[in-house]
Length: 148
Image: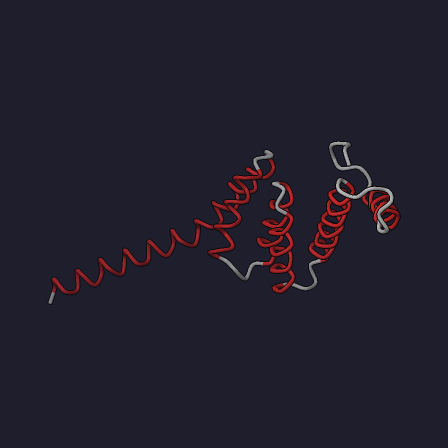
């Protein structure tokens, strides 16, 4: 009987310690991921946020931050999906709506730029594409690095 009680106590202690470790781990991971993002290591930040949303899938802020990371590494489609996941969890997250719209506008601009590589000025859609591209360029302004 004493041996059984020792086993139960041992298992309970292991369970208690492991649950404490699991609860503090996401917080430690979050600090590390935020540090990666702040240092400009967006690939590492994306990997970290992907892990964190796997552990805490209902956390809108983590989805939002993951989306921002996807934008930084040039994955706009993944960013749109992550922004939508953030908004499903918290539809009042204003910056997620803003960044989702900005990402769609950037994607539209890229489509116009790509299309202009292949059409000539005698194409019936040329003037419309050029005008919309110009309006998007004006609306979006230069990127952080000064380019468009």
